[in-house]
Length: 63
Image (cartoon, rainbow, N blue to C red; front, side, top):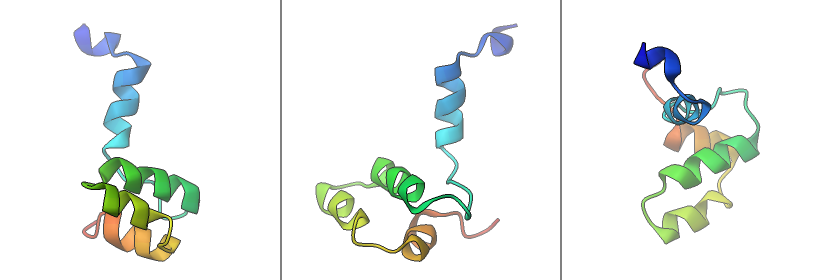
């Protein structure tokens, strides 16, 4: 029964582990990339990348 009681926050956290859809907006990809960046330098780089580069760098390559 505990699984049935999963909060919206828990469900969002699980969903956050997966990258946005390839068709998602660049802003969604930037947000996802910032959450996964391991340094301030990498986070700053996010705004300079194209959507295609964000997908290539932070998306799942083996669908």
